[in-house]
Amino acid sequence: MKYRSTRGKVNGIPFSEAVMMGLADDGGLLLPESIPLLSATELQQMADLSYPQLALRVLSHYIDDIPQAELKELIDRSYATFLHPEVTPVMHKDGLFILELFHGPTLAFKDIALQLLGNLFEYMLAKTGSHMNIIGATSGDTGSAAIYGVRGKKGVNIFILHPKGKVSPIQEMQMTTVTDPNVFNIAVEGTFDDAQAIVKEIFGDLDYKQKHALGAVNSINWARVLAQVVYYFYAFFQVQKTTGCSEVEFSVPTGNFGDIFAGYVAKQMGLPIKKLILATNGNNILSRFVNSGDYSAAKVNHSLSPSMDIQVASNFERYLFYLYEGNSARICAAMETFKKEGVLPVSAEELSQAQQIFSAASITDAETLATIGEFAFSTGYILDPHTAVGVQAGKRVGSGDCPLICLATAHPAKFGEAVYAACGEDPELPSAFQGIDQLEKRLETLPADITVIKDYVTRYALS
Ligand SMILES: *Cc1c(COP(=O)(O)O)cnc(C)c1O
View 1 (spheres, rainbow, N blue to C red):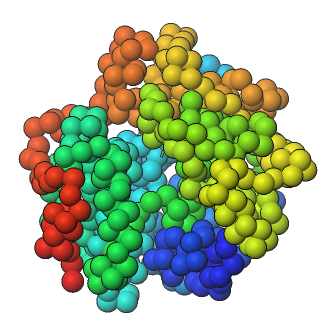
View 2: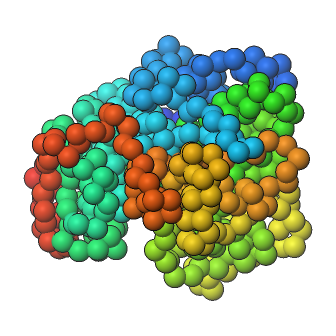
């Protein structure tokens, strides 16, 4: 399988190059040249596979430049770090199915992609005898999942900036108690926006970027999307076994459109998904698009589901590429229009096509709290605020004529304050995390000053 960019100027590159490139060199997003359609026989053969076996099966359709035995070893190692033997188990509660994606080392679904990505980076860097310095800014989830993805890996150093005192205590502890010598936590004396602006400016210095082999781990990397395709298959087979259903719907708490785009890929591969339900919080650019074609950016408001607080969804261009029938010139023009006028041109017919695949709903913070409270009351099961957004959207716009699978993207203990406000209970931390507050911490506190931060990175970067 070869890869190409949505913008049309990068073509015919192998998987490993696509992974190392991240964002395509022409500013677009990388996609496989085709999405393989699986036969009914192959789907049947997949139904009883374990999670890592299934991952190998799905990924092999997209990766032909890593020998099978080595790919298998990378996958096995990536999912051995999960705290549940099934990796992504499915629970049946209150008439719906909850797909638990939070059993990885940082208790959020990003681990599923980043555990694999870390191993892929290490493998590819070793092959080429090169190294990489990852820099990123985080408001919480992505940074810690990235740190756990590459901790202790050879050929990679990682520098993660977080706003000092402005991430949740559990998120701060998760990051700063990782004391592997290749991990550098920087607490920036400023806001998340300050930290992000510094990272952007560092990447904008192309000489510096090249000299220090800078890399990113943001959600536009194709390998991240690919890793997430697997659990749509896994969940479908589990639910099919208990219900005998011939199709399902998924409700997906959505921010940057990476997770739900993986569901779209699974559907294009022939997995019988009736609808993908796109669930947003009050930052609802994507649900507005699905419901009325209005893709116009608004100001970001902080919500109880912070990992979905986005203005522009970085993976949406991937779906748009298919909606525009692979017309790169139109993608380039649309992105230009969006930049200038803040709106995306789609025809009525294209909108109706999108509506055949997606349903959408936007859920307020008050509705999120009510959902957590009601669900805990009726089932005893505690939802995290992101998952609650998905559950509520699923109840509201699900078709009701096939099983509904709601993606649980974070463990409730990560967002204990909101959960407590909703149902008066403090969710218990999994045993692997108890005592985390006693562990040694390693971090550097620096001012929000690009010169100081660049000096620090220069001093500790691999070269
Ligand atoms: C990142 C994240 C999301 C949103 O996923 P996207 O791929 O950005 O749409 C939802 N929930 C949690 C807990 C997350 O960390």
